[in-house]
Length: 466
Ligand SMILES: *[C@@H]1O[C@H](CO)[C@@H](O)[C@H](O)[C@H]1NC(C)=O
Ligand SMILES: *[C@@H]1O[C@H](CO)[C@@H](O)[C@H](O)[C@H]1NC(C)=O
Ligand SMILES: *[C@@H]1O[C@H](CO)[C@@H](O)[C@H](O)[C@H]1NC(C)=O
Ligand SMILES: *[C@@H]1O[C@H](CO)[C@@H](O)[C@H](O)[C@H]1NC(C)=O
Image (cartoon, rainbow, N blue to C red; front, top):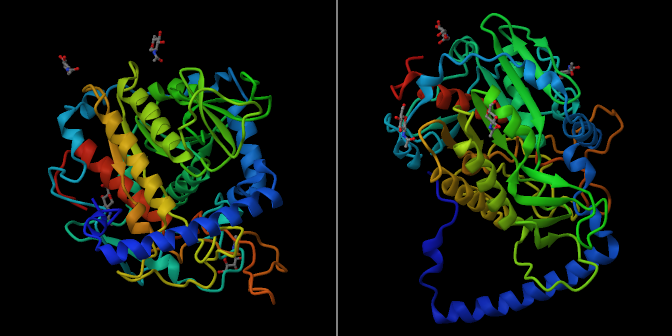
């Protein structure tokens, strides 16, 4: 697995460097405190995250559609076929070491290379891709970002074979759970499969549902930005309307849906900077973007990144121990954003990036690295709870995708022909999305890797025969 932090670097600091780094830290702290108080003054605390960051209309409709509809009986109608269950039974020991599959293949250590064959679909051949991800349709002038493919150093990563995917998943259900990044991955999969078979739309207000008749494959997606139980009802002295996250209680929607799924794909993390109050065992243990109205006597030591770790462990341990679920759970690791030289609201930009970064050019973002480490820790904690019924896999794409600053919509988020796409006279870049991925684009690689994981699990760890 690729290393997120060059920890050795910090082990042998010389005295002189130590002094200068203390001086730098003091300066940075001053800058931060000044900036932070400016942020607080200039922005209400509940708007830490810009709505457009997640696609405004989409978020609210997702939330309405996927969270509010309690008791919808459509879930019970998901077709399910139990006969393959024995195929996914494995021993817990096999799961612990992710990088050492029997095939000896580390899918996450590799390089990007240019493939003139181009992508598996285009914006014109996939009718369901979200307009916010339709970079070509939104006027993005360059196109080469569609053609880079991932090549692991030590093994083959075959091009996505849609027929193969449908065969492997025959009679099965794959469910995507998470935030808008999970939607990005699910739509990419749909677009790829659409090229061999147009699925039937069987979705409802609660969730997206697509059915491929030829092999009776079902794809589901529903919204769960934190993967844990959340409510906005008043709690203690935290009023109505503020999100309360029960970090130790899994989101009941996917607990209910899990038994109907053969493969579950989790992808989230980008909602943790949002305002919320964290609870453990029904006690407030931390807040994010919110100050408690009265002095609190318990310690509030859980930060947003720590909350990500705990909630990841909660959700995955719930899958590992779920009495009615015996599927394969794949966790897509934290997706890196590329707001370079600033944050989304302080001049950060990915405009004009037309090719991947070269080895050695990656700019490390501390937040991405911390989130990745927290998620990974939560994942490994959960694997300790595995019995031999179900299986957990970390799809560790974070490092590889740090190179893909060219793969985001940037300012090409909507089809408005009059949108601003260049820096203004004040030097500030236009509003842009450097978090989600263009389609077609790098996100298609996630599904290539996912197919390889599924293939290894369902066919055994033999080398790819494709
Ligand atoms: C797809 O992108 C092309 C530009 O490459 C554009 O002309 C076309 O209108 C787009 N189609 C859709 C459906 O967005
Ligand atoms: C895709 O998979 C199918 C079914 O396994 C196989 O017959 C076909 O040869 C594969 N196509 C390619 C291009 O590898
Ligand atoms: C598993 O299924 C049984 C029988 O349908 C049900 O009573 C139980 O609550 C289910 N367990 C979970 C964790 O969903
Ligand atoms: C694993 O599964 C077998 C049956 O397939 C069962 O006998 C055994 O007790 C299980 N082991 C654990 C640790 O759950």
